[in-house]
Image 1 (cartoon, rainbow, N blue to C red):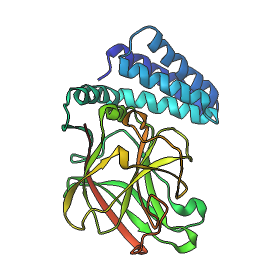
Image 2 (image 1 turned 90 degrees about the vertical axis):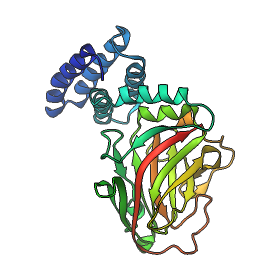
Image 3 (image 1 turned 180 degrees about the vertical axis):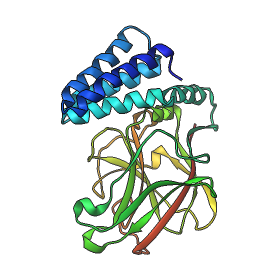
Image 4 (image 1 turned 60 degrees about the vertical axis):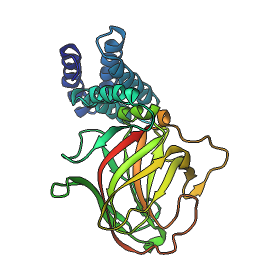
Length: 283
């Protein structure tokens, strides 16, 4: 958990900035948050992980396309510190560094519920006229797992449904990893794990296809060396291999296409359901 000094300063910033935002001055709110973040960094009150999270948020807020977006980038960074997510990431990074070759460490665990961070957002083919629909990431207490479900269809010219995390400092724990392992239960469909190395809405993402058996919990191992760089369903040549320290976002996708741009022969329109208990890094 963050120190009392950090918590107090962030809460004061939110108490001052939120009314400014609600009054219609997103820029004033963002500037209030940015000043507090830089003050915490400069005075050494924040931990190394909190400093990194705040500095990254300030950079992204100042580069954002609007003051509104910048204000929310800062607010989410503050929330991640208040929730203890950044402290948990620092702990995870220490654990990851202590794991020897062949070992593994936890990145995200969904067995007791959905973690506060990262947040997940839906990105379906409706953005291109399609009609697929994700239900988002939910929690099934009976299965002790997160569930990604919905309906995927080629109607309307689409053919994919996906879910993507926000930028999350916790993924930096993958710096020492060679890949990830996930405990999943599928429905016979092929899925993709997506990894993004930047905060852009669009752009290149690295993908790995996996097909867990229907009805049985199975651990799948996805080495970073096997992820393929893609852009809008096509592979991108001359891109460097994915490395753990680059990962800023992770996502899940079900699609009529494979990660190398081919079409899945047995793809079918209809419902999908993927259970997920954990994501771990392995070294």
